[in-house]
Amino acid sequence: MARTPLIAGNWKLNLDHHEAVHLVQKLAWTLKDAKHDFGTAEVVVLPSFTNIRSVQTLVDADKLEIGYGAQDVSAHASGAYTGEVSAAQLAKLGVTYVATGHSERREYHGESDAVVAAKTVAALGAGITPIVCVGEGLEIRKAGTHVEYTLTQLEGSLAGVTAEQAPTVVIAYEPVWAIGTGEVATPEDAQEVCEAIRGKLAELYSAEVADAVRVLYGGSVKSGNAAQIIGKPDVDGALVGGASLDAEEFAKIARFQ
Ligand code: PEP
Image (cartoon, rainbow, N blue to C red; front, side, top):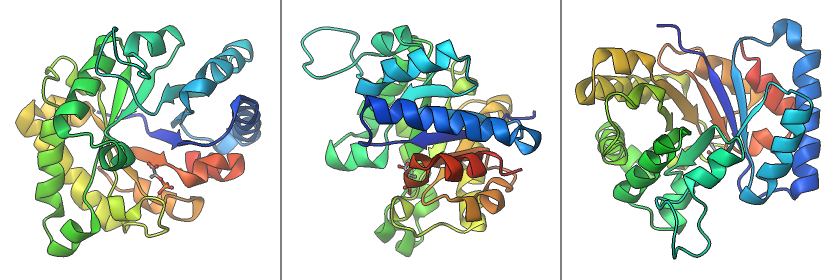
Protein backbone atom coordinates (compact mmCIF):
# COMPACT_ATOMS: atom_id res chain seq x y z
CA MET A 1 0.00 0.00 0.00
CA ALA A 2 1.26 3.49 -0.83
CA ARG A 3 1.41 5.47 2.38
CA THR A 4 1.08 9.27 2.14
CA PRO A 5 4.14 10.80 3.79
CA LEU A 6 3.43 13.02 6.77
CA ILE A 7 5.59 15.92 7.93
CA ALA A 8 4.42 17.20 11.31
CA GLY A 9 5.86 20.24 13.06
CA ASN A 10 5.84 20.14 16.85
CA TRP A 11 6.06 23.76 17.91
CA LYS A 12 6.32 22.81 21.58
CA LEU A 13 5.95 25.69 24.06
CA ASN A 14 6.70 28.46 21.56
CA LEU A 15 4.88 31.38 19.89
CA ASP A 16 1.89 33.51 20.86
CA HIS A 17 -1.21 33.44 18.64
CA HIS A 18 -0.01 36.31 16.43
CA GLU A 19 3.31 34.58 15.84
CA ALA A 20 1.56 31.27 15.18
CA VAL A 21 -0.64 32.83 12.49
CA HIS A 22 2.35 34.58 10.94
CA LEU A 23 4.31 31.30 10.80
CA VAL A 24 1.43 29.39 9.18
CA GLN A 25 1.02 32.20 6.62
CA LYS A 26 4.72 32.15 5.80
CA LEU A 27 4.71 28.36 5.59
CA ALA A 28 1.74 28.41 3.22
CA TRP A 29 3.45 30.94 0.91
CA THR A 30 6.70 29.01 0.95
CA LEU A 31 4.98 25.73 0.15
CA LYS A 32 2.94 27.39 -2.59
CA ASP A 33 6.01 28.96 -4.20
CA ALA A 34 7.57 25.53 -4.28
CA LYS A 35 4.44 23.80 -5.53
CA HIS A 36 6.22 22.42 -8.59
CA ASP A 37 8.53 20.30 -6.49
CA PHE A 38 6.37 19.90 -3.41
CA GLY A 39 5.53 16.24 -3.38
CA THR A 40 2.55 14.54 -1.93
CA ALA A 41 3.50 14.87 1.72
CA GLU A 42 0.79 15.95 4.11
CA VAL A 43 1.93 18.92 6.19
CA VAL A 44 0.68 19.45 9.73
CA VAL A 45 1.60 21.83 12.54
CA LEU A 46 1.04 21.28 16.26
CA PRO A 47 0.69 24.66 18.02
CA SER A 48 0.04 25.29 21.71
CA PHE A 49 -3.62 24.89 22.74
CA THR A 50 -4.03 28.67 22.99
CA ASN A 51 -3.07 29.13 19.33
CA ILE A 52 -5.22 26.45 17.74
CA ARG A 53 -8.30 28.63 17.26
CA SER A 54 -6.27 31.32 15.48
CA VAL A 55 -4.61 28.76 13.21
CA GLN A 56 -8.03 27.24 12.47
CA THR A 57 -9.44 30.63 11.45
CA LEU A 58 -6.56 31.25 9.05
CA VAL A 59 -6.54 27.75 7.55
CA ASP A 60 -10.31 27.86 6.99
CA ALA A 61 -10.39 31.42 5.60
CA ASP A 62 -7.54 30.88 3.14
CA LYS A 63 -8.35 27.20 2.46
CA LEU A 64 -4.76 26.27 3.22
CA GLU A 65 -3.55 22.74 2.62
CA ILE A 66 -1.96 22.66 6.05
CA GLY A 67 -3.38 20.52 8.81
CA TYR A 68 -3.14 21.38 12.47
CA GLY A 69 -3.23 19.44 15.66
CA ALA A 70 -2.39 19.48 19.35
CA GLN A 71 0.63 18.42 21.35
CA ASP A 72 -1.35 16.61 24.02
CA VAL A 73 -4.91 15.63 24.96
CA SER A 74 -6.70 14.59 28.13
CA ALA A 75 -7.54 10.93 28.62
CA HIS A 76 -10.83 12.14 30.15
CA ALA A 77 -13.98 13.23 28.36
CA SER A 78 -15.06 15.91 30.86
CA GLY A 79 -15.32 16.67 34.55
CA ALA A 80 -13.07 17.72 37.42
CA TYR A 81 -9.73 17.64 35.60
CA THR A 82 -8.48 21.19 35.96
CA GLY A 83 -6.23 22.37 33.17
CA GLU A 84 -6.99 19.48 30.83
CA VAL A 85 -8.32 19.72 27.27
CA SER A 86 -10.51 16.94 25.92
CA ALA A 87 -10.39 15.24 22.54
CA ALA A 88 -13.95 16.42 21.81
CA GLN A 89 -12.95 20.04 22.52
CA LEU A 90 -10.04 19.68 20.09
CA ALA A 91 -12.17 17.99 17.44
CA LYS A 92 -14.60 20.92 17.64
CA LEU A 93 -11.69 23.19 16.61
CA GLY A 94 -11.03 21.10 13.52
CA VAL A 95 -8.00 19.40 15.02
CA THR A 96 -7.11 16.27 13.04
CA TYR A 97 -3.90 15.14 14.78
CA VAL A 98 -2.65 14.97 18.33
CA ALA A 99 0.73 13.85 19.65
CA THR A 100 0.48 11.34 22.48
CA GLY A 101 3.38 10.14 24.61
CA HIS A 102 5.92 12.69 23.46
CA SER A 103 9.11 12.03 25.44
CA GLU A 104 8.83 15.47 27.07
CA ARG A 105 5.38 14.51 28.39
CA ARG A 106 6.70 11.13 29.53
CA GLU A 107 9.70 12.72 31.23
CA TYR A 108 8.33 15.95 32.75
CA HIS A 109 4.77 14.81 33.43
CA GLY A 110 5.45 11.19 34.34
CA GLU A 111 3.21 9.80 31.61
CA SER A 112 3.29 6.02 31.63
CA ASP A 113 2.44 3.80 28.68
CA ALA A 114 -1.00 3.26 30.26
CA VAL A 115 -1.67 7.02 30.35
CA VAL A 116 -0.43 7.37 26.78
CA ALA A 117 -2.71 4.53 25.71
CA ALA A 118 -5.72 6.15 27.41
CA LYS A 119 -4.99 9.44 25.62
CA THR A 120 -4.53 7.61 22.31
CA VAL A 121 -7.88 5.86 22.74
CA ALA A 122 -9.55 9.16 23.69
CA ALA A 123 -8.19 10.84 20.54
CA LEU A 124 -9.42 8.00 18.32
CA GLY A 125 -12.83 8.15 19.98
CA ALA A 126 -13.16 11.78 18.87
CA GLY A 127 -12.03 11.03 15.33
CA ILE A 128 -8.56 12.56 15.82
CA THR A 129 -5.46 10.76 14.53
CA PRO A 130 -2.98 10.16 17.34
CA ILE A 131 0.73 10.47 16.61
CA VAL A 132 1.97 8.00 19.21
CA CYS A 133 5.56 8.78 20.19
CA VAL A 134 7.98 6.07 21.31
CA GLY A 135 11.74 5.83 21.57
CA GLU A 136 14.66 5.02 23.83
CA GLY A 137 16.99 7.14 25.93
CA LEU A 138 20.74 7.22 25.55
CA GLU A 139 21.53 4.55 28.17
CA ILE A 140 19.25 2.07 26.45
CA ARG A 141 20.73 2.88 23.05
CA LYS A 142 24.23 2.34 24.47
CA ALA A 143 23.14 -0.98 25.99
CA GLY A 144 21.89 -2.07 22.56
CA THR A 145 18.37 -2.87 23.79
CA HIS A 146 16.67 0.01 21.94
CA VAL A 147 14.55 -2.16 19.66
CA GLU A 148 13.09 -4.29 22.48
CA TYR A 149 12.56 -1.20 24.65
CA THR A 150 10.76 0.73 21.91
CA LEU A 151 8.54 -2.21 20.96
CA THR A 152 7.50 -2.74 24.59
CA GLN A 153 6.66 0.96 24.83
CA LEU A 154 4.71 0.69 21.56
CA GLU A 155 2.61 -2.24 22.75
CA GLY A 156 1.81 -0.50 26.05
CA SER A 157 0.97 2.78 24.34
CA LEU A 158 -1.50 1.08 21.98
CA ALA A 159 -3.36 -0.87 24.66
CA GLY A 160 -7.08 -0.62 23.92
CA VAL A 161 -6.63 0.45 20.29
CA THR A 162 -8.73 -1.92 18.20
CA ALA A 163 -7.77 -3.54 14.91
CA GLU A 164 -10.37 -1.32 13.20
CA GLN A 165 -8.81 1.84 14.64
CA ALA A 166 -5.18 0.82 14.26
CA PRO A 167 -4.67 1.58 10.53
CA THR A 168 -5.31 5.29 11.12
CA VAL A 169 -2.80 5.61 13.95
CA VAL A 170 0.56 7.27 13.24
CA ILE A 171 3.64 6.13 15.16
CA ALA A 172 6.62 8.43 15.66
CA TYR A 173 9.93 6.79 16.51
CA GLU A 174 11.78 9.48 18.43
CA PRO A 175 14.99 8.37 20.11
CA VAL A 176 15.16 10.65 23.15
CA TRP A 177 18.89 11.21 22.72
CA ALA A 178 18.22 12.79 19.32
CA ILE A 179 15.46 15.22 20.36
CA GLY A 180 16.56 18.84 20.44
CA THR A 181 20.19 17.78 20.78
CA GLY A 182 21.43 18.08 17.21
CA GLU A 183 22.34 14.37 17.48
CA VAL A 184 20.50 12.74 14.62
CA ALA A 185 20.03 9.02 14.15
CA THR A 186 21.52 7.71 10.93
CA PRO A 187 19.05 6.72 8.20
CA GLU A 188 19.98 3.11 9.00
CA ASP A 189 19.25 3.61 12.73
CA ALA A 190 15.84 5.08 11.85
CA GLN A 191 15.07 2.30 9.38
CA GLU A 192 16.07 -0.43 11.85
CA VAL A 193 13.56 0.68 14.48
CA CYS A 194 10.80 1.81 12.09
CA GLU A 195 10.94 -1.60 10.40
CA ALA A 196 10.78 -3.33 13.79
CA ILE A 197 7.78 -1.17 14.72
CA ARG A 198 6.02 -2.29 11.54
CA GLY A 199 6.83 -5.89 12.39
CA LYS A 200 5.36 -5.44 15.86
CA LEU A 201 2.17 -3.92 14.40
CA ALA A 202 1.82 -7.00 12.21
CA GLU A 203 2.15 -9.19 15.30
CA LEU A 204 -0.28 -7.11 17.39
CA TYR A 205 -2.84 -6.59 14.60
CA SER A 206 -2.23 -7.89 11.08
CA ALA A 207 0.01 -7.50 8.05
CA GLU A 208 -2.61 -5.19 6.52
CA VAL A 209 -2.55 -2.89 9.53
CA ALA A 210 1.26 -2.87 9.56
CA ASP A 211 1.25 -1.94 5.90
CA ALA A 212 -1.22 0.90 6.38
CA VAL A 213 0.23 2.60 9.47
CA ARG A 214 2.57 5.54 8.89
CA VAL A 215 5.74 5.39 10.94
CA LEU A 216 7.63 8.68 11.30
CA TYR A 217 11.11 9.44 12.52
CA GLY A 218 11.75 12.37 14.85
CA GLY A 219 14.91 13.78 16.38
CA SER A 220 16.90 16.75 15.04
CA VAL A 221 15.47 16.44 11.52
CA LYS A 222 16.62 19.27 9.27
CA SER A 223 16.52 19.94 5.53
CA GLY A 224 20.04 18.58 5.25
CA ASN A 225 19.19 15.11 6.60
CA ALA A 226 15.45 14.70 5.92
CA ALA A 227 15.67 13.22 2.43
CA GLN A 228 18.05 10.42 3.42
CA ILE A 229 16.01 9.45 6.47
CA ILE A 230 12.58 9.69 4.85
CA GLY A 231 13.95 7.87 1.83
CA LYS A 232 14.17 4.67 3.87
CA PRO A 233 11.41 2.16 3.07
CA ASP A 234 9.81 2.03 6.53
CA VAL A 235 10.08 5.75 7.32
CA ASP A 236 6.93 7.56 6.18
CA GLY A 237 7.77 11.09 7.21
CA ALA A 238 9.04 13.10 10.13
CA LEU A 239 8.02 14.68 13.40
CA VAL A 240 10.04 17.89 13.47
CA GLY A 241 10.60 20.05 16.54
CA GLY A 242 13.05 22.97 16.39
CA ALA A 243 13.27 23.16 12.61
CA SER A 244 9.49 23.50 12.27
CA LEU A 245 9.66 27.02 13.76
CA ASP A 246 11.42 28.23 10.61
CA ALA A 247 8.96 28.28 7.69
CA GLU A 248 11.59 27.97 4.98
CA GLU A 249 13.46 25.18 6.69
CA PHE A 250 10.25 23.28 7.46
CA ALA A 251 9.02 23.72 3.87
CA LYS A 252 12.31 22.30 2.62
CA ILE A 253 11.86 19.27 4.86
CA ALA A 254 8.29 18.86 3.57
CA ARG A 255 9.43 18.72 -0.04
CA PHE A 256 12.10 16.15 0.59
CA GLN A 257 11.23 14.18 -2.49
C1 PEP B 1 10.23 16.73 18.74
O1 PEP B 1 9.96 17.64 19.50
O2 PEP B 1 9.41 15.83 18.56
C2 PEP B 1 11.51 16.74 18.03
C3 PEP B 1 11.80 15.74 17.24
O3 PEP B 1 12.33 17.82 18.25
P1 PEP B 1 13.66 18.21 17.42
O4 PEP B 1 13.32 18.10 15.96
O5 PEP B 1 13.95 19.62 17.83
O6 PEP B 1 14.73 17.24 17.81
